[in-house]
Image (cartoon, rainbow, N blue to C red; front, top):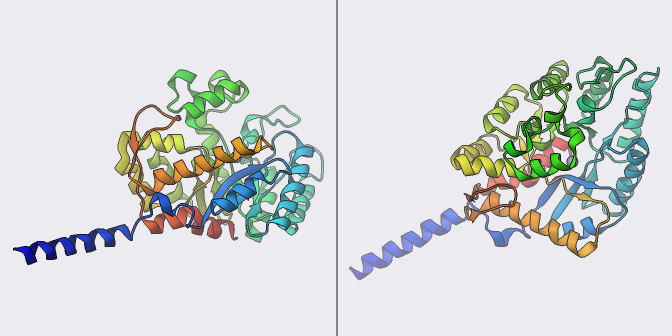
Length: 354
Ligand SMILES: [Zn+2]
């Protein structure tokens, strides 16, 4: 009887330790190679790089056409010199401006600027929601992402194998009143940015029209590598994300600033979200959308570290968790190691061509 019990114990321990080999734990956080694939640095501060090195992260810094064209050029210089100084820790994207849209030469100038940025080390090109929500042409018509004037620019990217990173449209919550939004990150953001709260602007294109313009653009450019920021603005439904990924074989997405929507769906149906991650493990990338504007160093670095650690807990453990982003308790996804390695590093390297 004693021998039987001991063998059973040994077998159980062997089984558990074998299962454990398939998963990471909280203490593995600093050991595993990770990339924050959606990060912003709009300063010459090195606070982000310092924390990234401590936490074994690399940063993909996304330059964005917000706040005017001068800021785009200035940010490009910062990101370029950051890359020169911290070659191992940072990568960056370019972006382009819409100034001069109605004048001859916009296409040629834009392509020349992109080529110059790529020669300086940029690995992709970003477009932002101000296309579709803000910029108008000389006839006061909103410029949408499927406007034919973009075609030669996107064709150029496709030919050169330069990925297009797109934050197009907004989360579906943007078209709802604040009190009906599913996550607090959205209700807080739109309360503070009413100019982008589309529920207040019914004269602008609907959510479906924004998504349809993006999809028409992708259909025109089947060879273009496309990375949809913020779960491609389909964050409200893993079924919608799956359908988008199935439809466009050259598309992937980052989860930056949309963990709240993943928590919300996990709260409702954890297995469904977990299956989505496993089924689409080659098409998803980790990112935060944290913005470094040179804030106070210690508080900023603590917030950065804590955000990375919370997201790690959600993705690798099955701990019971709560979040300031949603109401209610949910359990982490406990994704297998190979899935974690892909979303934190391998996919980013593959899709962006590091
Ligand atoms: Zn961003």
